[in-house]
Structures are given as structure tokens and as C-alpha cells.
Length: 223
Image 1: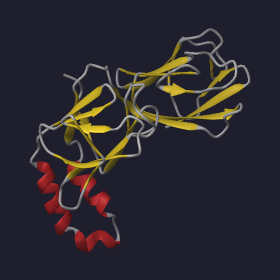
Image 2: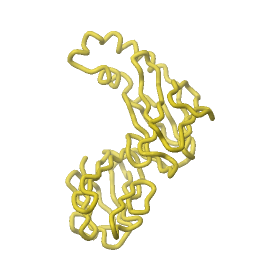
Image 3: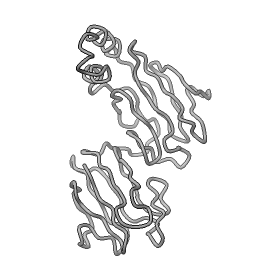
Image 4: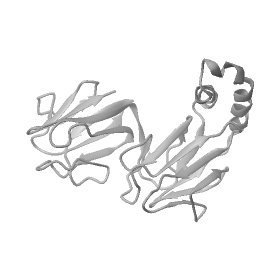
């Protein structure tokens, strides 16, 4: 069985963009979103994906999820886990309606369901939460302004990668990998010439402001 993943408020699922990233070439960017209604229903919704969204083998556009449901995105499968806290969260939301002028309903609900495990990947794709999550942004090169938020890993970045594809001219097919180790988010160079803060490092603990470069291409890290 795979890792349990908590859904807080609204979460998007995609191949290289979203709160939950899945290493699946048949997943779109983004592919679907999962959110919880004021009534405590867990909803999954297709975001005009190329290959569709399936729940229990049936193609759906929007579906309320129940314990035991199997969600399929490309070749990746997730199982919805049972929890009595969803109903409790809805009740807490109802009781907190008067406070919504100063705090959004998403904020009230997120507090109540913090740490709630709702879905579990069924196929062993080795997903681990990145702690902390990071955003990488191209600051120099033909794709200036393009950015990707990575919440789960490992994620391979390169011009031919199905995880995070940076289609810059002459950029390596697999340039570097972002992964979680010992509770830290790290980077590992996969190609000679990849520099981290101007240095040729094989691996490095990522921090906000780090710069990854290859020739004229620069990618800035934000946390």
C-alpha cells in the first residue's frame, strides 16, 4: 500500500502542477481537484483532463466520494479512506458560520480536518511529501516566468521528463531530481554541468533563494 495523503480544503492533482503530483504520463496539468463541501461531502472533479477521471471504473466529471471508492487517474489509483471526522468538520463549520466575516469557511474547515487521511495511492509509485514544499521558477532563459510547485516527490526535472518538463534549448533530458530525505527537501544533480548556487554539487538541501543553473538557464527556488 502507498502513503496516506491528507486533503485540506481544496487540493488539485496533476502531473507537474498541483498540490498532489503524480508521476504518470497520462495525467494532465492539472487533472482533477478534490474539495470538501459545507455539508462535509468529499467531491472530486475533472478539470478537462485529456484521459478522463474514473471512480470505481466509471468515467465521471464530478463525483462525491465515499469510503472505499477507487479513483483512477491514468495508471495511478487512489483509495478513499474512512473517517468520522468529515462529518464532525461539517458540524464545526455550521457552528462557526457567524465567524465567517473574519475567517473564510475554507479556513474554518481546514482547521478541523488538519491531518485527515482521505486518499491512499494503491500503486507503489514511491510518493513522499516534500517538507517543505517548493516552487521552482525559470528566471533566465526562453521560459522566463514559468513556475512549478512541488509538494510531493521524487520529481525529475528536465527537457524530456514526464514529471517537470522544462523545454529549454539544450537543457538536459534529465537535469536534476527533487526528493525528500530525513525530513528535508533535497536536490540531486543528474547531469554534469548542473550548478547549484554556482557550485558543482551532487546533492544539496534546498532553501529559499537557491539558484539552479545550466549554461544561460537559471531556475530559482522558493519555499
